[in-house]
Image 1 (spheres, rainbow, N blue to C red):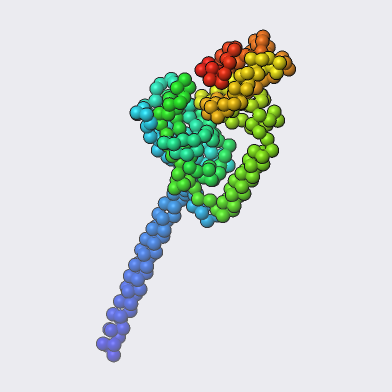
Image 2 (tube, rainbow, N blue to C red):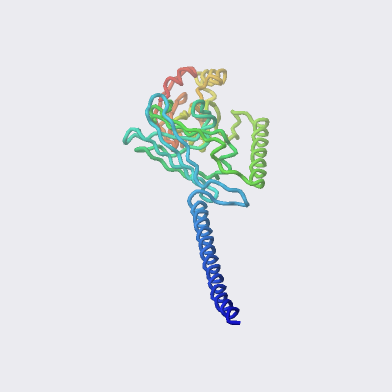
Length: 316
């Protein structure tokens, strides 16, 4: 009996000790698991806040950064950052090696930096290495227009020289949901259909046409003056139907439409009924040409160019 009681007395504290040890180990394990989970959750929050956001189950990059390389031995390199702004896009261009105090025009073109096409979106000029622009278009919409390229020009006076460029590729753009893709495709199809209808219904010289294209000769409209930029020139041709020399140069331009430089738009102004324009630019007789900037300010005025080629030579 004594031995049995002794064994029971010894076993009870031992059992209590084992239970306590198990509780301690379990508590440590639970705490470690919670701490690890907390660290992971914190990390995920930081990722979502700093780099990515989740939309309808699709992870989308918040900022897109592309590299900008030097062109024509300029040594000017940098980057462009695209940021989503609730349906709009902020574009920040940063260039090192740029000339201090010299504004450098920049645009988003179709194509690539080695073979840029037409301008799609004008950007603010790069001044002292930086430019910031808010585009009235979403990142998702930009992604439907690829390939695109950011191009920086040497200066306004030497706008035909590119000093740097960078490519916008599909790899860097945010993924779209099925709904976004469908909407984008519908918009693209609608735009194509509308464009085809306009081409069929109107010609470039239709006076009711307000669409402006570089390398064109068409009827004057006030809004078309806005095409003038660092890379595009606009010239007003004050023409009278009764003027023999006006008719001659008009015929020569129409016969050589394909030879109009892609950076030039010639606007046909009716000399007889454009009193306000004549007063604004001091035009006193027909067969006068006036080159203007995007705000309609006079850049140069001359008279008597007998042919298209002679006109082009006069353009600054």
